[in-house]
Image (tube, rainbow, N blue to C red; front, top):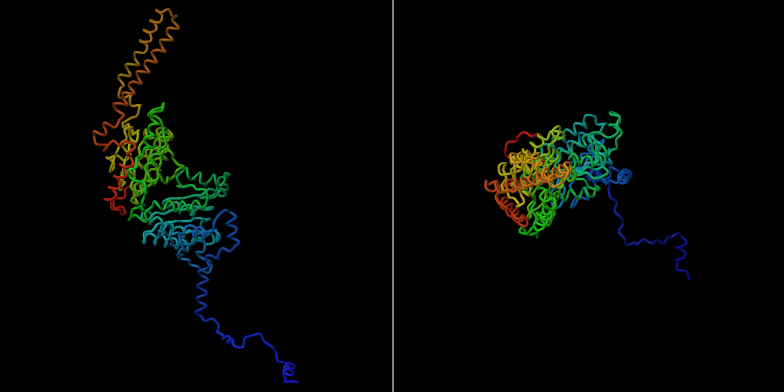
Length: 573
C-alpha cells in the first residue's frame, strides 16, 4: 500500500533540523554616523594604553622597569582619571600621561613619562599638558607626584621640545610653596628631564637609575673622560650632594616611599599636615633616652661620648616612627618628619655620633632647605641641639662656610610655625646663637640637665683662667729645679734626678690644668646662667621629654592658623 510518502521523498523534499517556530532574524541597517563616532571615541580612550605595543612593553620589562600605566595602577587607590591626552596626527603628547587620582584616600595630581613611546621625550604639547596639570593642582590645592622616565626634549620637535620644557619649568616654579610635590626618577633621564623633577619638594631615586645634565657619551665626546652612568649621576652621587632626598632599592620601593611621604605632607600651604589618631600616649615616659644618656656619660669618655641622636628622635615620635630625609648626606645633622600626639612635626638635630655634631657646609644647607620646606607648609619644627659649633678650617672657609651658615640662620629666623629648642648637651658659640633660641624666635626652649651652654667649649678654659694657667706653666722650670735637687739629695744621679723631676712636675701641671678644666665646666659650661636669664624656660628630665614637648606642641597648634606665608620674602643665598 502506498500513501504517497515515498513518492514525495523521491521527488526531492529535504529534511531540516531548524526549528520552524523560531522567528526569522531581522536585518539591521549599517552603523550610522553616531555609532561610528562612539567607536572612534572609545578607540581614543584606549589609545594611551595601546600606544606602546607589546614589543615595547616587553623591552621595558627586560630593563627591569615598569610601564607608566603599571606605575600609576600601583600608586592609585582606584581607577585614575586621565587628563589632557591630546592625540594629534603625529601622536603629539603621546609620551606623557597626566591624571588626577586617589592615593591613600587623598586627591593627587600625577604625571608620568611613557618611555615606551618616543622614550618619554618632551614636545610642545607635553609642556602645555604639564603646565595645565600644575595649574590645576594649585587651583584645587592638591599635591603633585611626578613619575619621571624621559630622555629629554624630542629632537624632531625642534624648538617646540625646548618650549615644552620652558612651559613646564615655569608652571612648576609658580606652584612651588603652594602645593608640595614628590618626584620619582626612573630609568635614564638627561637634560630637562633632570631639571624639572629637581624643582619639586622631594626627589626619590631607585638604584640602577641615572639622571644628570648630560649622559656619559656627551662627557666622553666633550671632555674625553670615561665615566659610567652610576659614577656620573647615580643615586650614590646625588644622595651625597643633596640632589636626591631618598635612595630606594627599586621602582616598587619608590612608589611605596611616595605613599609614606604623603602621609606626612599637607595638601597645600593652607592646611596642616594630616592628623593621625595614635594609641601611643603623649605622657609615655622616654626611659630609653635616660638610659642612652646614662650609658654615654658614665662611660670613660664622660660628657665627650658621642651618641646617635636618631635614637632620641625615635623615642619622641609616636610608636617610634619617623621618616628621615637626605639620610646619606651630612650625617652630622639629622632632618626628619615624625608625629607626636598624632601631629606631624619636623626634627632638626645635631648628631654627635658623626664629627661631634659640628655644623659644616653640607649640614647647614641640608638644615636650611628642610626648615624652609616646613615653614612653607605649616609644619612645626623641634630642634635638638648638641654641637660644639661650626666646623673650622681652610677647606670649609674656601668653600663658603660663612655663606652656608648664613643660609641656615636666615631659614631659622624666618620660621613662622611653632618651633621648639631642646638643649641636649653641647651648645657653644655661634652655633647656639643661630640655632633657634628665644632671640631668634623660638616658642619654647628647654634643656636637659646634661646641657652645657657657653661661648666656647672646653677650650674656653684657656681664656677664662688664662692667668692661673700662665702662672702654673711659668713656674715649670723652677719647680723642676727644686724637685731635681731634692732627688739628688736622696742619692740619685743628676741625670736621673732631672728626668724624674720633669716627669713629676709635668704630671702635676697636667692635674692642675685638669682641675681648672673641671672648674670651668662646673662654673661656666652648664645651664644655670641661661636659666637665670630666661634663655631656657625649664629643665626637663630625660624620661619626661616626650610628655613636655607633645603637650606644649598640642597647645601651640591649637592656636596656630595655617595659611600661606604673608611676610616679606627676604633675600636667599
